[in-house]
Amino acid sequence: MKQDGEATQGPEAGPVITLSDTHVVHKARTGGLFSRDRVYALTGADLAIAPGETVGVVGESGCGKSTLAKVLVGVQKPTSGTVSFRGRDLWTMKPAERRATVGAHTGMIFQDPSTALNRRLTVRQILRDPLDVHKRGTVRQRDECVRELMSLVGLPRVLAEGLPGQLSGGQRQRVAIARALALDPDLVVADEPTSALDVSVRAQILNLLLDLKERLGLALVFVSHDIQTVRRMSDRVITMYLGRIVEESPADEVTDRARHPYTRALFSATPGLLDPIDPIPLVGPVPSATRPPSGCPFRTRCWKADSVCAEAMPGFAGASSPGHRFRCHHPVEEEQSTRELVAQAVNAVPEATAMADIPVEKSKQ
Ligand SMILES: Nc1ncnc2c1ncn2[C@@H]1O[C@H](COP(=O)(O)OP(=O)(O)OP(=O)(O)O)[C@@H](O)[C@H]1O
Image 1 (cartoon, rainbow, N blue to C red):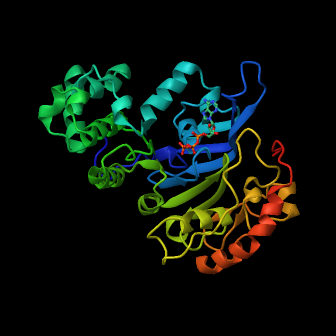
Image 2: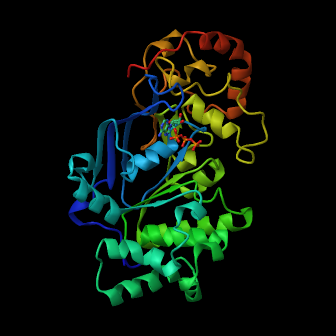
């Protein structure tokens, strides 16, 4: 196993993983066997994750967060675009090589450890399994590694012969985390890792993840609806809307210096982050991912939208600080307070509602 603070470096010190114009399009689940409806789950994602970096992913339900997570760990094949691990395109590799690369270098932690762990295997067997599959070390070394993993995640040794059903929710998630770390991955993706847990153990699991990331030098992608936690855990926050990455911001700027109206609206609706204010009002729900609006996908709900927004999706523009970029024709001013934006949005909502009536069509970008 990696020692404390030992990140994987050397000739591969560039990004751990890079997505380049990556799209995922599904056949729609609704609409019947012969339907030609498509769901645009991920559209044109460009993203590079550095070693040791924590990237949080936020966005409303259905905006593509889990799809992005699955693409990053090689579980979801992109419809087009590339996913490169340490500079090598995962999906041009032979299947066996891809499985070996993904298995050895990435780990995934799911929302619900009760369903993610095989109920018939003991903790020891669950943690031994990846070591056996990837033929790591001798049998004795694998047993030793299981003991180290248990200690790393704070599981008492006596639980080694326990079954998942005999453990508490928090202990099960510790097993899932240990399994994700078994092969010394460079990248761990945690998709809502605490939402199925009791509130009382959530903080423990989050602290464990933060501690492990520091000690092991992991790159961590953290997907959550809990915006406060994302901000606390992350170095950088990605905002997704209808399958698109619309903003990337340093975590300490995302609350009140985000430039994309959607990011500001999302954070304004999170209790406890800003002075008590009414959230920025948005028009209606997220549109269907089978018929995303033309141009900027957010324009049907945005108080700033005009006809330009219906025509084309803007490219990324940079904010004044490094690592902060956004895609918006009419970004929020750098120093504009959320209180001002609320007032602006309240006055503009009737116009925005009219904009929402511009017909949606399949996005062409
Ligand atoms: N296998 C699939 N077949 C068809 N549609 C899918 C499939 N997987 C995801 N989708 C659709 O793709 C879109 C993005 O889904 P995804 O699960 O990535 O969103 P999300 O932001 O993670 O949502 P949540 O926060 O609710 O988990 C949604 O419209 C979803 O219904």
